[in-house]
Length: 257
Image (tube, rainbow, N blue to C red; front, top):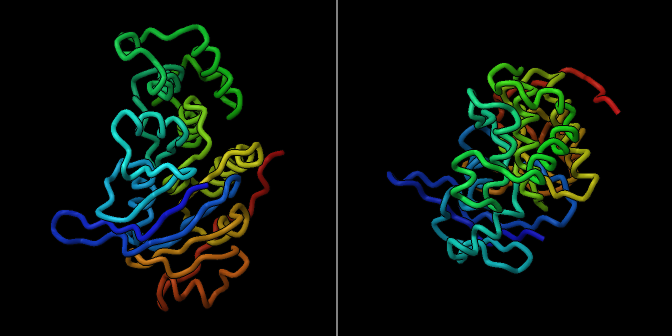
């Protein structure tokens, strides 16, 4: 279980991105975080694995205080927390296989990995991760030769190399069209059904209704809603996004079985 207690983040210059945010995430949930750009969604996700250092508050993972962890302890904790980024964060000129293998850095000998030397077991693990997201045939391709949806699947496969128990997906479909958005979320949903906890930030309300088991809404860094996706009606949408906001929906698409 993940537990967030009174989390605050103030950036240099005085901008407060998170204001006393508290909530819990049970094992096996598909929690979606919604809110306007700048509401604190990315900051929240990156504080969980301390890519961004919180200003105050506590984050517990199975009663281990992430916020108090030493660098060595944090390395162990991060093995359990995979990260999927909005802009994919791939090494464009490198092969798909090498990008996926980079997800194993927390386990590998740093000198050998720096030289690009990986064990046969890691190569096999990477191939299986690519098979899970349906692009094992792209293992030898350059990352920048892939479509946006394929690149994001490489990002998911890379996260799987950590053998995580939780995946943080920071706006994973923001740069994708509606059909590809459903495809990527379908793979995350499959992983969730296999037992992985997923925390994902999203914009489109129909995607929230389709994939989330529970929803957190942030507004100006404050947690203004926590509950079931079915409770996010038009009135609640206006409360979170503002009276002038228009509810834009992704196109309807049934993800492949």
